[in-house]
Image 1 (cartoon, rainbow, N blue to C red):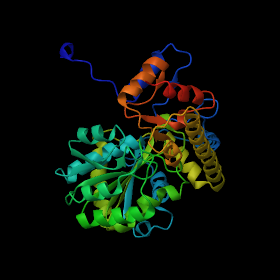
Image 2: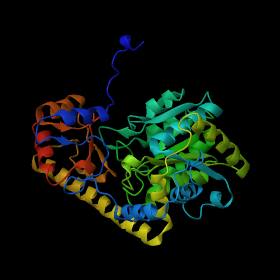
Image 3: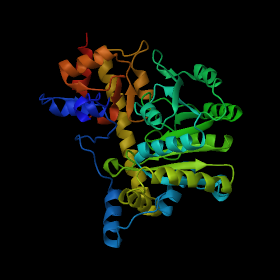
Length: 399
């Protein structure tokens, strides 16, 4: 059976990481995956996380399985973080959810759940979107289409085109949006636009699915949840897929959650029963350690404050790096957009959608050992004082 199998193409991001590791150039720069680096090029562990881990180590008394949906206290904390402490759906018992292995796991469970209850649903993705969105929902057996989201020439939200395109969606279809810091564009709707999007989706009978992987990297933890909170109060039902890889630095712990806001407590109970069936047939139950860290930090006022402050410093460093990157390109008289490079500082989150072509991306890799993904997405979070000039020089040298 295996002799006739042809090698599969490498993953668009992790495949580049492998190529980067094999590159002998001592000055190589990796700006592919969304991993935060500090000024010295390290991916730090949060102080609050280390403190929580010590506490867990001292107090932990068992390594027994978690239940299928994970620990109830973790799920409750994640729901409040996503929706706010005072969301009416929480008080009314209309919210349910499950702990998943990372945000990717949450998306796949969501896809399996949708396939089990609404197999004819079409999944609508923004164009552009995270490279793994399409494969996840296709693997779940769902049809996938896209709608305009970002103007690659003007580097702004294609709001009118998006709203016109969303008029095509049918009742029961699922529209995948990103809660904040859109990957790869770094461009989010305004509060007013979120309201209008919610009203359109409610009118069409569509289900919003919010992929929230960067809460806290835009403005702050609360403001970055504004879009999904607005939608959750306008649209009767909503799915939220949360990840704590970035905002807790728990990349290798794979900590995420799937949250459902429903119309009644009975609907929440029924939905969770189907989610549990999907999980049981996939990974059975989630890993415990990462969720214990998140729960310990969010339940403790002092640890939560420490986490919030450290996240704020990371956010500020990314903003400063954006300014340095744009200024470095300006100094070299390189304009990535007709209006200059100011769009880099307007974008939010870990990435900049640079506008570089596929050919330019290949040239950066082959001639300068600067690695970015084929879409032209640059990980600003991976830039440091030690490599930013090299990146700017390499872009300036492009043919």
